[in-house]
Length: 432
Image 1: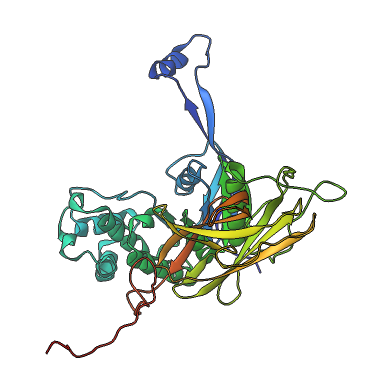
Image 2: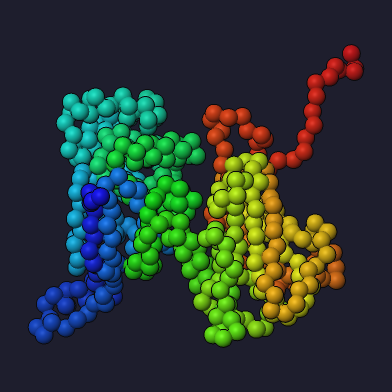
């Protein structure tokens, strides 16, 4: 069955000319022999992909990888230096906070202004106005100039306009990060509904959990080049593996014949692994990969408060030595929430023969408040003092690992950063 194409990008390239000084630009323009004073910089280079109608498509990559430049070319804001992009359908884009708003106009006036930019008549916006204002939930501020709005109010109104008019193509570029958790939940629910109704969704975010859940396919960019385009879970896995590996991950690779070792098969649920790297023979043991499964035994980087998750650490023994393993969790403020492992659980250090692939299993109950966390795994050898050990190998900090809860509609098991055992009861005042 032929699927209807929404966006078709072919060999998209956007090149900028960089000058050391403004005068160099003038010199190049009027130089009699056309001397070159600039340096070329490819923000996007030869990127091709196809997005079909009703598909949810993610664009991921580090800061500076070209995500926003690519979106601007899709939306027609930037013209490609080379290549072409075909867009079939009306596009609503939420690229920058307050883009398209007149700061002197009230929220009400900007609703109609944005509607007109999107091609809607006043009568059509009249029919949608109550729904838009209800979704934005900014109260009487809708009658105030938007220059008086907070960043959260800005994005509430901007997203409400774009989402409630039900465009054929909706483009969202990280704008929802300024909203609170309740508004983000509302927006994600709305985007799922739009997708079900046939809207093509293009979503850019650094929240890999949302990308993996919301987007069917994703493109992974690095330094303007397309590294991968395909299923989102594979794009996210590659993002974690390659981006963390190139910065801080230790190196590994070998087998008996070709000096190459493939980590054990783990059904594709690795949240980090080492591959195609050189073995570090100076280490007694080295990490191969880490997997994570939710309470249902499915690969995931998310959990609900109170749910148990399971991590498996695979490692290779280069020299037989006593080993302990640990897992650490930090919150988004870089505070260490917990560090625990085999030593603190009174397990004897494991001693395996040289060349053996071992595994450590951690089962953790997520009695943490809802939010984003990062994870760290390590191998160590026992120390001579309590709570002291020598690190042998460790992963980079991995994430985000998200813990979720519907605070609006369900009673939370606790409030605060984490749960502590508490018993309580009503009783009479003995002083009376």
